[in-house]
Image (cartoon, rainbow over all chains, first blue to last red; front, side):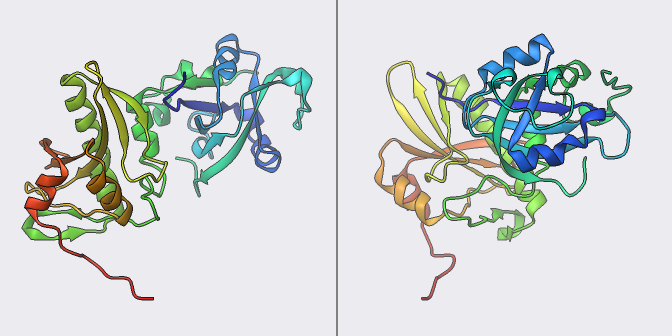
Length: 106
Length: 178
C-alpha cells in the first residue's frame, strides 16, 4: 500500500521548453524514452507531486518553474494522443493538475 | 538532442544532481523536496487557509512569509528526526490534507500518533492553533503537538498532549464576526 506521496522532479528538455504551454493546456506532461525515466513514470500515482524543471542550465528561463500534482497514473504514449511535436520521442504521458507556477524560473 | 547541464548551479541549490535532471523524471530526496517546496509562495495550507504566525523573541509574533516558511521547514525536519530516534515511523504526510494535523506516525508497539508541528523562532513554547487543529487535537487522545523552539538555529523539540496545552493556557487570538 502506498501511503506516502512521492515527489519527483520532472524536466523539460531545453528544446522542448515551448511544450510547457501545451502541457498546461492539455493537463499532460510527457516522459521521454530514458529507461530510468520510464521506470519512474510507471510508479507515478494520483497525488504524487512533480516539480517541473525547465532544462538549459544557465540559459534564460531555465530552472524550477512549477509544482504540479499527478491526477492519475502515467499512460503509455502509444495508447494516447501526444499533443506536442515529435510524439515518437515520448514513452509516457502523465495527467496532472497544476498547483502553482512561478512567475519566473529559479 | 539531449540537454547538457554545465555547472548546474540551479540544480545544486536544490541538491538535485545533473543526472537526475537528464533522466527526465526522477524521485527527489526529502531534503530536495523541502528546498523545492520552500520556493512556492504558500506554506503548507492550514485547514481553512489561515496563515498561522509563529512566535518570535520578545513575546511577539511574525507574519513574515519567508520566516514562517523557514521556521516551519526546520521544525518539520527536527520533528521527523526526533520521532525516528524514538522508534516512530511516518505513516502519512497530511500537511496538505487540511485535516487538523500534519502527520500520522506509528510505533512498532502498535501505537498511532497524530502529529501537529509548531515551529517557533523564539526559545519559549508559544504557538497558534487553527480552529480545526484545536477541534481535532483536543478530542483525539492520540494527538500530540510537537513544538520546536529556536527551530532554525538550535531546534529543541517539546512534546505536548492536550492536557499540557491546557496547562499552558489557551487564549483567543482573534474573533470572527458574522
